Length: 271
Image 1 (spheres, rainbow, N blue to C red):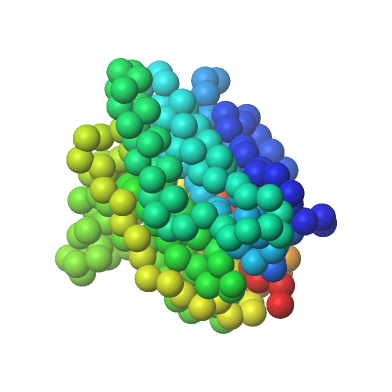
Image 2: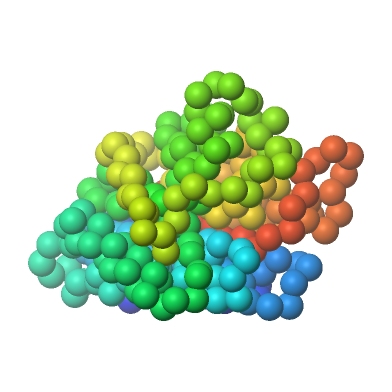
């Protein structure tokens, strides 16, 4: 595994093996696949952006279905972040304001395209063993401890996400709710808002997880946590993606099953 020197982007992938790279005093895995029941574009995109030895940007985006150009919206958001690179080991990484400005420019471009396309976006700013989530929509950021403790979880910008956060609906009810697909905040909307979360110090064996709803609609939260909390990142990523594909193609009993494009990033600090 070599240190990542240039941004690693995945756009419109049919299927990929996990890409394993060294970044930000740690290592990360990025993988994506197209929904098994479709032949069109994968509307997801993902990127790992190396900045300095101790800093990086991780992001996943999920183009909102219903537009034939949804994949272009997710790519626009990801490419805006990939453009924030700095020469390796030289200078300071982009400020948080620069990340926000990049997202706002992507929003302007998606709106001005006139295609009606939109996308969610989940970003993690990694800096000196600390992480901060920045998100729009229902793609998610989690931080999971080795023993399965959920140390961070973003709240989905959706009616169902807010209902779960308020305690009026549990995760099980939310998983099967008919309005789970509704999203109330997206890049491509005039009233798009950017939620910036608190900074969290990473412990040695914490796993940072970024996922689109292909994962969240097919795995219960406790299943996802159990898959990623221990073992190598590559094996953890394969466990998640294999389980998601199995649920999509051959669900058992009352297990959730929603074919969808799926993208995953996992990150752990190395020292």
